[in-house]
Length: 400
Image 1 (cartoon, helix red, strand yellow):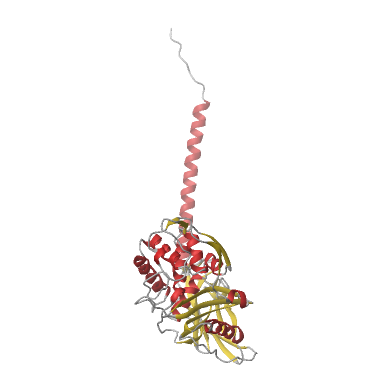
Image 2 (cartoon, one colour; image 1 turned 90 degrees about the vertical axis):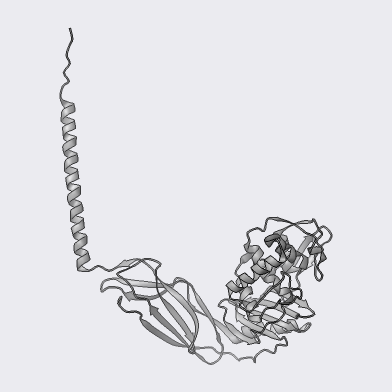
């Protein structure tokens, strides 16, 4: 087996889910998408890769970058620029000092444009430089059709994103526990220099939709209403993005997408993290257990039969395999479409022995024993001589 370039094994099973399907959601927004939050699988889309103005959902990337800066306890001195911004604000004043963490909170909960700009200036020196870092981060995450020129989302030439890209960015951000905590906060006390109040989260779904997790809304005259909404129920979680909706239709668009996810799909755990996937005959006498590097989840449509296949592909193996070494991958397919790939690792180290290696090892062991035996004889001989010398009586001469 070790000489094969790969081994391909397939396991096929049919999954049946009962339940009445509801129709595809009716979305008024220009661009929209629904994804499985755990796997990133796209479940439904409408112009999901077309570029539109994002408005304040821009702040999702601003916030997660600030959180990941590890500077949340730093005190930010507000410059002259943030107080000049239009739109939603917390009325920061020039010279006012606020922690970076508090700025992140009001950016996401109240959608404060002045706080978002203050974050950008503090972390990068200028908003233009911070926008460059935002675009670099977006590219790293796979949001390839996005370009930001500011940190808050007010309309500007060249400032755009897609529903798909925003889903990618938000799914990444929601993996951060602090980000998740902030976007689920309903009410935040605010004690600013010019304004003291209780800030109410602008995401109405936090009050009205079961399992809502946030995350952000937005509006400008160019972008219209935009929203990124997530919800979790009974181990399932979905993320909806809507761009270019109109007024309160934003809420029905987002809720309709989430309903479509919960009512039409069943999340299936294809493999657990560190689950033993296969046991291989490494040699006639030695077994090699391979485990999954990570888990793999997939949402299957309810109703009808789904053909789920798993393919085990092994890399060429040498005469020894170290614990944790990648030895292959498992490819999962649903109805012929690849839905996930997981690296396979060796659970324990194994080594194959042949007669030549056994002979060499035996000879080396005998040689080592011989050296130790000689060393022991010499040590005993020297020790006996020292003892004999010390046991003889000392002679003293008396000088007259």
